[in-house]
Image (cartoon, rainbow over all chains, first blue to last red; front, side, top):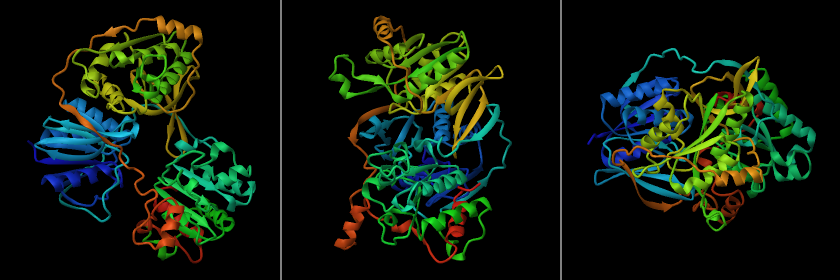
Length: 316
Length: 269
């Protein structure tokens, strides 16, 4: 049986790298990694790291198929996402390997690879056993990324970028306005609560959302007051969102609101009350008047963000 | 244009208690795919839409439901050696079930379980076709068939519709309501079964099930190091604090600092 495992990290936060590191530690295997769209090596000890730069799906599959042809891997674990699913499926078909998706845990037991995967929409997990010498696993996006800190690689290879050929002919690209973007599909949500004071405050949030290419959300209080439509309500009685960026403006952080946005990747809270519960879950806390900060922020974003105070340089 | 829609059924315990005698229904991703395929048929006169599924006989009711939503025909591929989750085998079976001279395959963007979220890409690889995710609509512009695709940052991209490609539909759109006449006709229609070729022994087997993964494990679980007031505050805010990764922006020039942070995180172009 091969004694190596391969992680394919498709961004800074890689669940695949975290799964492979754990598997390699527990089973005394050598772990290799292919890094796409990022230069940050995930935490852990890596035998070989390949910095692939920016690749499209077909280039990534070619690279992985080539790697599998030269090195026998017991498992190839790919990050979730469109690129990861496509690369995993195409690699499995091209190399004739079995594939398991939504993987949340890996372990070896009596020489077999056991993959725990999410099943039935998350209502339970399924334990899959692979008898094949090599298996492709697409990690679930619910797998957390590896621990903080730089990783170490014994050997690092940097690939030269190659031109990408678009597979589909682009006619045009347009930016939707904040009101046209669905809350559930938005990467950026700028949400307002009681602290916005009225519809004028929400007009300001729309401007901020426009500047960030996102959409506007609202707390129940703001919707009840008629400042935003119900379709924009985030929380237990509204929509549950998990955007890459959630900016909570003038929202205290009541439990029923927090439950609808706590899975957001980066939560920024702006509130004048330093004791507001929203600061307990926020990654970035800004204590100040939202009516001053938001217009200044819009102006900063439109004029190009000027150099910030050194104190922030180490943030995140 | 000959369009194939990939259909996938999901188990629904509630249905088993009903009068349909089936506990499987079309999943939401398949419904989104049907809506997109029907918009493609409207855009180009003379097009046909065929539903294809690789699933057991229990899927028949779900496949018939797809027919009642407006598909022209449906086919189900299954054989004695077929097995859910065998992506390689299913890709082969679905390729055999494709309508003659198929121009376009439309699938759902994701589905629950059985590696069905990988299947559209496996089918694309089998056929040597490209795949694109987030397709939200198909129409005609200047006499050319085009498709709208959702992109990050609230963007919409319009691409020339490429024949011989796999489109993954964005989860949007409302399924057409099947008229009673259509439902009756679909219920009476035979679902052609295409025997799937038997594949080699499955390399991945299901060993058993475990409990759901506690994705919200910190919910209502306050920090053990906090005092009573702190624990109450944490409970009120929905769980433990994320102090390990939190930062406070203080002092003057708050907005420029925040703008710089958003730029650093890649949210400002």
